[in-house]
Amino acid sequence: LAKTTQPISMDSYEGQEVNITCSHNNIATNDYITWYQQFPSQGPRFIIQGYKTKVTNEVASLFIPADRKSSTLSLPRVSLSDTAVYYCLVGAAMNRDDKIIFGKGTRLHILP
Amino acid sequence: DTAVSQTPKYLVTQMGNDKSIKCEQNLGHDTMYWYKQDSKKFLKIMFSYNNKELIINETVPNRFSPKSPDKAHLNLHINSLELGDSAVYFCASSFGLAPDNEQFFGPGTRLTVL
Image (tube, rainbow over all chains, first blue to last red; front, side, top):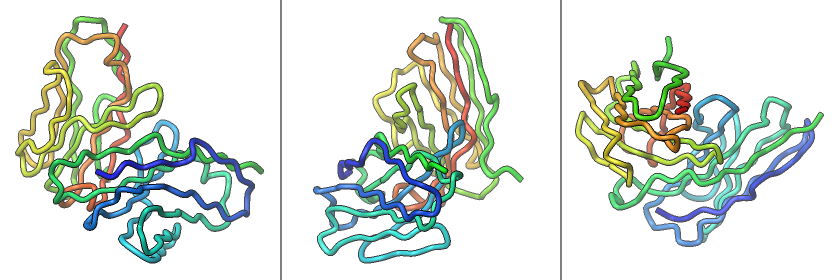
């Protein structure tokens, strides 16, 4: 499983666009990139998943450059309720030796 | 209509005791997981079952024993509890194997060992 590196924490203000970048230099050909969100005292929740280029859903966008060695989760017009920990997960189930590693995540704090 | 449920939500017990945490999912998923999240918020996978078959068993003390009576249930039994076992334990499920497939997490069980 590709090791991931994310900023430990980020602060932003309501209404701003927030971009959280995850580095995964040794990503494998068949690896997917998945982001989860975790609020305090809750289990993680799936946000978005991608393989290459750009993926967008009603919650976020995921930008993946051609070399796939990094990815950026983009949250448009954040609100206070977006304060949470965001985890970047990289891997593929077919790589049976891989471990599912959530890492330390990025603690996003939205200020009023 | 809880998708993934765990019981109990809180568990406080003494060192040396044996305890179980139950997990049930009503999503029709074929894969279930147990994760441990410690005080530093690291979320680490412990076990994974696919169609009642153990497919992931991370470096976890053999005091921890998962049991899957059917595809909808994955229980975690812990023998001889230690202080270091204090953590939040999350159950999750997915249709197909993670990380490719979206995992749905339960609300967690906060275990405190005194």
